Amino acid sequence: MNPTILVTGGTGFIGSHTTVLLQEAGFQVLILDNLSNSDAQVTQAIATITGQSPQFIAGDIRDEALLTRIFAENNIQAVVHFAGLKAVGESVAEPLLYYDNNIHGTNTLLRAMKKAAVKTLLFSSSATVYGEPQALPLTERHPLSSTNPYGHSKLVIEQMLGYVFQSDPQWRICNLRYFNPVGAHPSGLIGESPRGIPNNLMPYIMQVAAGQRPKLQVFGDDYPTPDGTGVRDYIHVMDLAAGHLAALQRLLNPTAQTSVQTPGELLNVNLGTGRGYSVLEMIAAAEKATGRPIPYDICPRRPGDVASCWASTDYATHVLNWRAERGLEQMCADAWRYTQKQQG
Ligand code: NAD
Ligand code: UD1
View 1 (cartoon, helix red, strand yellow):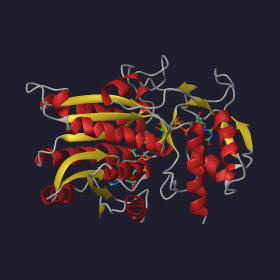
View 2 (view 1 turned 90 degrees about the horizontal axis):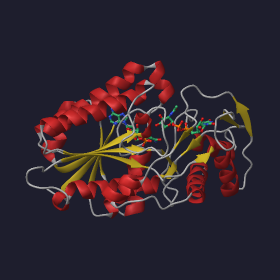
View 3 (view 1 turned 135 degrees about the vertical axis):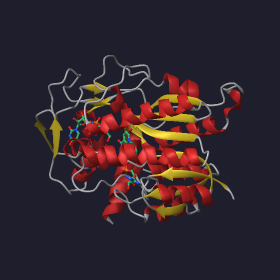
């Protein structure tokens, strides 16, 4: 049996781009996704890009019998765990959904991994685990907190993984704390297609540029930032995917960093660019990339938003030998290409 990487949530936004890079690096990929927020046709788009279709199983990470079968029938080397729900507002309205899907789902996955003695895991965490930034840039040593059930679920999972590692130091785990992933594969064949009204800035801007929505609401222009609008560390999804590849290669090739006494490791690594852009800067960049106006209204602040958030990238560079390479222009151009292809 060929060594295979199990990618949960692999038909989703970040999972699909990471699958492309994993396949291009020579890994066999098996995607497990319940399609609650993605489409099975993404596997065909991945095959068009890479020339190779990933294996795909439509199923849920909370289905322990299914997971047990997957581990028994395949030679899984490592798991890249994207599957989860991610809408902050929805998590406030339906917290139990998030505890079930994200926390119970991850617990079920970890049980199946333990049973199968597969102990190498990349986990999709988020900069949301830093809560309200006390100092910028955010380093991995910044205190952790959460302000909503989505963020709480990420924090609890990081803590669970800490205790799993403590109980058995053979585990090799990397929590990747994403900042604001945007953009799309340069082919325009895969990208971010949120269902319903987008919660996040970039997909909303793209829908306005495409004429699908009349105007953007800018949530607050009275923050202590240069132009008063919120500042975030937007990172191209292909750079993010490359960060996963670097992390996986490190976890699978431990010899350089570890000894016989400490065979495993638990890492927390930011994936960001280290620089922030305001909402108004994002609008200007998108207008340039799309050649379309992005009308907007200044509206009240969105509850729970922080003024500014950007990453320290030093540790990622040191530990993964990785850094983001793509700039804002490319993020907007690639997102726009994908949006236009979706429109047909
Ligand atoms: P996404 O919704 O596009 O992808 C998640 C995928 O997981 C979807 O395809 C969905 O169908 C699947 N899924 C959800 N619950 C499942 C379950 N119980 N069993 C099997 N499949 C399930 O989201 P994304 O943007 O690609 O995010 C991937 C991960 O990264 C998530 O865990 C998210 O919380 C995390 N994250 C995302 C962002 C972001 O801005 N996109 C930021 C920080 C962290
Ligand atoms: C949000 C989540 C975060 C999650 C991330 C990825 C909140 C409070 N935080 O991050 O936990 O990890 O998405 O899913 O929801 N903005 C507008 N108008 C819009 C949309 C956004 O002005 O229609 C502004 C926001 O106020 C913010 C910036 O754009 O200043 C980025 O917003 P968004 O894309 O939602 O990302 P975050 O809030 O950083």
